[in-house]
Image 1 (cartoon, protein in one colour):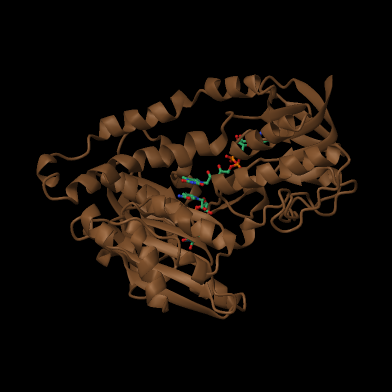
Image 2: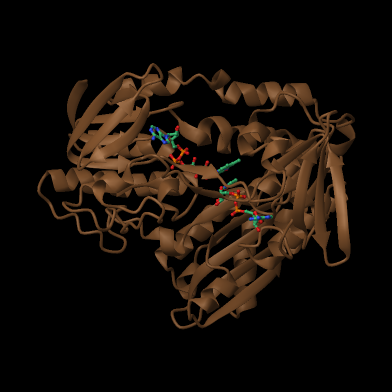
Length: 478
Ligand SMILES: Cc1cc2nc3c(=O)[nH]c(=O)nc-3n(C[C@H](O)[C@H](O)[C@H](O)COP(=O)(O)OP(=O)(O)OC[C@H]3O[C@@H](n4cnc5c(N)ncnc54)[C@H](O)[C@@H]3O)c2cc1C
Ligand SMILES: NC(=O)c1ccc[n+]([C@@H]2O[C@H](COP(=O)([O-])OP(=O)(O)OC[C@H]3O[C@@H](n4cnc5c(N)ncnc54)[C@H](O)[C@@H]3O)[C@@H](O)[C@H]2O)c1
């Protein structure tokens, strides 16, 4: 068996693994990345990139339709074939040559195959032909294996061969109709995308509202827009069973407080969450329980491993399932590995460069529905649950001058959550067309713990939608 030694071995070449490898290489260490599928990971080929490519044309069309004068120039509907072709361009035919070239250029070795820990600092890789290579790591192994979709235990569901986010982002044809189980980000974005391309869509949501992790008004705005677009949203729906008939149609039976109901469609998408991809990675060979979540510190070093050489970074540690947060963790972790290899302690104290501190209080996220939902930090409810004395300040985004210019009849809402003891912003949620590009200002305020009195001097330009900051501060009482 081929055996090679490196300073660092990274398992998984998604955005997280690529960034860990990049940082340790910049830190002067040799590094190999193991990848079983495509360099670039889920994000590049079946998640962020193709889903946003599917959603962007509808947003562009809505933007034009929202402005008198431009509206009259838009007389047709989306060209679904062109949208799918554009999406295909972004995933490069699911060939990873470009990303492999980047790895090579950065001096990072790629080992294709499935990686598995077989003991301390040891990773065995099996390639598709069955050939095995052993990689040993002088300093660290970083598991960056991502996450996999969860299929709930519903009678008949697996036999219907439902779409997960993979099939829903790579489909080559618009289904005539689609049932979606779930009310989170994947469900909302992909329901919206396929509706915009012409599918009849029904969303079956178990809870009371869409996007339940966000401020309640976020889901309410999105639901209203969906219903206006002819998308059917059923809340408090408990799915009982699913069956696909000989003609290929899927029927899903569900129960609501009003009674039993069913829906038949050409396709079914299950979007009920994701779990860390820890299956078969050999955690038991290094003394960890493979059925338990991997516990890590803020430098992503795994707790309970003798010698402290194992790290778990990105989706696999379950801290914040977002590409930008995986990359952020990768920068902290990669720099910590490189510093420790130089003999430095690299203490992951809060806000040090070796700590992913923002994971706890300042995770930004944009949901690319129409309206968009952009949020960072804590919701009012989460802040109260954390024991903070907070005040939520609300403002109708549609009455900001910049918003009225941006779109006729602009509808949106903003909430700023203020920690009253420290008089700093701990959370912000914006809902409305184009708000995704506004959220970074809030992220800076939250991470910087900027006192409101100083924030007052951050003057937003007139007439931009960002003037909502002035209005929020005035509403607060400044
Ligand atoms: C539909 C959808 C849309 C999304 N949209 C967004 C978005 O707009 N913005 C955002 O920030 N996040 C988004 N996300 C989340 C984002 O995709 C993930 O947070 C991100 O991909 C995590 O990166 P990662 O590198 O940790 O894992 P992944 O991207 O999953 O990469 C893990 C890699 O490890 C490889 N691997 C796994 N096991 C092994 C093994 N044993 N050996 C070798 N290789 C292995 C896999 O093949 C894969 O390439 C979306 C997710 C979904 C499902
Ligand atoms: N734009 C973005 O940033 C973006 C886009 C897509 C995905 N993501 C990330 O991917 C991750 C996964 O997204 P997701 O939407 O799959 O997960 P999620 O956890 O956000 O939502 C899961 C949904 O499924 C429902 N659900 C769970 N079990 C169910 C069951 N048995 N029956 C019916 N409904 C059930 C939940 O109530 C919830 O509505 C998220 O953490 C998100 O951060 C991000």
